[in-house]
Length: 78
Image (cartoon, rainbow, N blue to C red; front, side, top):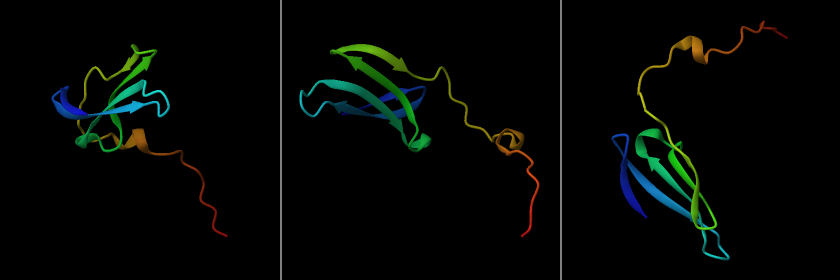
Protein backbone atom coordinates (compact mmCIF):
# COMPACT_ATOMS: atom_id res chain seq x y z
CA UNK A 1 0.00 0.00 0.00
CA UNK A 2 2.62 2.54 1.12
CA UNK A 3 5.85 2.99 3.04
CA UNK A 4 6.26 4.52 6.50
CA UNK A 5 9.15 5.17 8.86
CA UNK A 6 8.94 3.00 11.99
CA UNK A 7 11.75 3.32 14.55
CA UNK A 8 14.05 4.69 11.86
CA UNK A 9 13.41 1.84 9.40
CA UNK A 10 11.51 2.09 6.13
CA UNK A 11 8.52 -0.22 6.50
CA UNK A 12 6.40 -1.50 3.63
CA UNK A 13 2.74 -1.69 4.65
CA UNK A 14 0.76 -4.70 3.44
CA UNK A 15 -3.01 -4.64 3.92
CA UNK A 16 -4.84 -7.91 4.50
CA UNK A 17 -8.51 -7.88 3.60
CA UNK A 18 -11.35 -10.39 3.78
CA UNK A 19 -11.80 -11.83 0.27
CA UNK A 20 -15.59 -11.92 0.51
CA UNK A 21 -16.42 -8.62 2.20
CA UNK A 22 -13.34 -6.52 1.43
CA UNK A 23 -13.17 -5.60 5.12
CA UNK A 24 -9.68 -4.72 6.35
CA UNK A 25 -8.40 -7.37 8.76
CA UNK A 26 -4.88 -6.08 9.42
CA UNK A 27 -2.00 -3.91 8.24
CA UNK A 28 1.42 -5.60 8.41
CA UNK A 29 4.57 -3.45 8.40
CA UNK A 30 7.62 -5.22 6.95
CA UNK A 31 11.20 -3.87 6.95
CA UNK A 32 13.89 -5.37 4.71
CA UNK A 33 16.38 -5.36 7.60
CA UNK A 34 14.18 -7.77 9.60
CA UNK A 35 13.64 -10.36 6.87
CA UNK A 36 10.27 -12.10 7.18
CA UNK A 37 9.67 -10.89 10.75
CA UNK A 38 6.92 -8.21 10.84
CA UNK A 39 7.97 -4.90 12.38
CA UNK A 40 4.45 -3.83 13.32
CA UNK A 41 0.94 -5.27 12.95
CA UNK A 42 -2.37 -3.43 13.31
CA UNK A 43 -5.41 -5.70 13.77
CA UNK A 44 -8.87 -4.37 12.91
CA UNK A 45 -12.27 -5.51 14.14
CA UNK A 46 -15.37 -4.26 12.36
CA UNK A 47 -13.40 -1.47 10.70
CA UNK A 48 -11.77 -0.04 13.83
CA UNK A 49 -8.33 -0.64 15.31
CA UNK A 50 -8.50 -3.47 17.83
CA UNK A 51 -4.86 -4.32 18.67
CA UNK A 52 -1.51 -2.78 17.70
CA UNK A 53 1.61 -4.96 18.03
CA UNK A 54 4.83 -2.95 17.75
CA UNK A 55 8.25 -2.85 19.43
CA UNK A 56 9.31 -0.02 21.72
CA UNK A 57 12.84 -0.11 20.34
CA UNK A 58 15.11 -2.13 18.07
CA UNK A 59 18.77 -2.90 18.69
CA UNK A 60 20.90 -4.62 16.07
CA UNK A 61 23.74 -6.45 17.81
CA UNK A 62 25.45 -9.80 18.07
CA UNK A 63 23.55 -12.23 20.28
CA UNK A 64 25.38 -13.67 23.26
CA UNK A 65 26.15 -17.31 22.34
CA UNK A 66 24.84 -18.53 25.71
CA UNK A 67 21.36 -17.31 24.73
CA UNK A 68 21.18 -19.47 21.59
CA UNK A 69 23.04 -22.54 22.77
CA UNK A 70 20.83 -25.57 23.28
CA UNK A 71 20.97 -27.96 26.21
CA UNK A 72 24.11 -30.02 26.68
CA UNK A 73 22.71 -33.42 25.68
CA UNK A 74 25.04 -36.43 25.75
CA UNK A 75 26.25 -37.66 22.35
CA UNK A 76 25.51 -41.31 21.60
CA UNK A 77 27.44 -42.99 18.78
CA UNK A 78 25.65 -45.99 17.28
